[in-house]
Image (cartoon, rainbow, N blue to C red; front, side, top):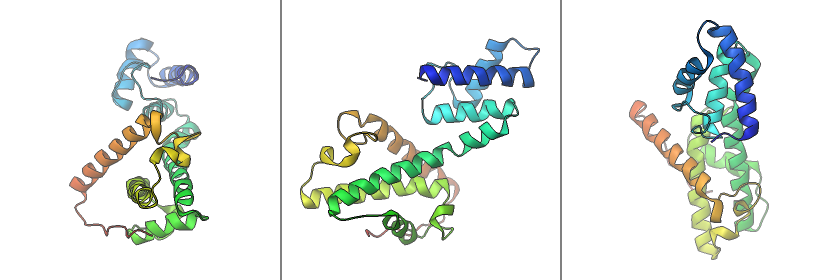
Length: 197
């Protein structure tokens, strides 16, 4: 479900999109149809407040010809994935009991054989595929050193990947697995497995 603040932003954008794209159609019916196209739900109470909201805002921004907003929401998932990777870096740092900087994640990226070679230019697809790789590494390390996952930095604010509120992270991981399976069906080229760094 969208938050109250998200609903306000969305409705403002939806009105602008309606005025630009379909001023002669009844607003609510048109909005519901476009919402269904954008994210598969026609009610703000049925839209996921992360990636569903991003898809919704991107779609309506394009209809409103608000290209700066469309660009912002087109990049939203990549920003979120990089934030998740930063959190996972904190877990690795905690488990290794040493500083782990961005180069550790970049090393895993390179060992996985992803292209382009520059991590900053990594595709969203490859960044998404890195999350389960790194999460698996974290789980294995935690088991080796005898730490519970609930004791890791990402169990608390601002991440909540572990422990009581881990459901969103689990949903996100499920979504990544689904995308990976869909991508494999389209792109059967084998990828080198990441070697634990």
